[in-house]
Image (cartoon, rainbow, N blue to C red; front, side, top):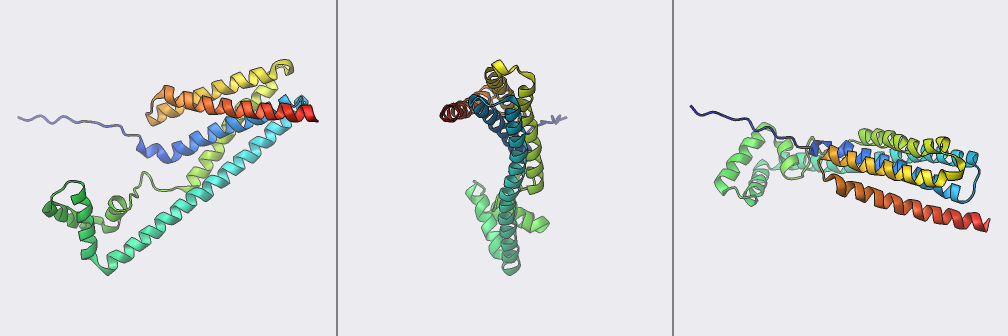
Length: 233
């Protein structure tokens, strides 16, 4: 008797939508807020001013992330819907042409012409629009644009990320605020890179180094500008 062995597979592509927004939001929250705090602190500002600047950056950044994600992902969604409407019209106008088009796609992937046409007809018999959306347009349930989800995810993770360097202002002594802020923020970024990589099944060290490098660069540039402005003023 032949024994059938199940081969479970764990793919993470379904996480692309929310994971991208989450990593982007948290990363931007840490980098922008920490850079703002470091820049203001480098200008020799008072602790109260540093805290106010950081809090304002958190609120403004969260709203900006939410609005930006919603607008950009909505544009993607509008494009997808327009393509689906066009495909729906083409299916209503000439089904046979759409069968040939779909069969051509399968044939280009290595399926022989006869089998390609048979598969195309069977797939279209079940759900013609969904089949063309997936195989012709590349639109699927896992990767479709979700503006509301992206907006809330980005805003929430930005707030969470920004709260970390902001908390350092409250906890660190004024005399060593700059040093503590830089070190803590880089550690936060490294942790974020590792978590994002693990969640997406990517190499951890590569993601961690990438996130930390760009965060360090942003902080260094902002600190330099803050120092120059503070000296000039």
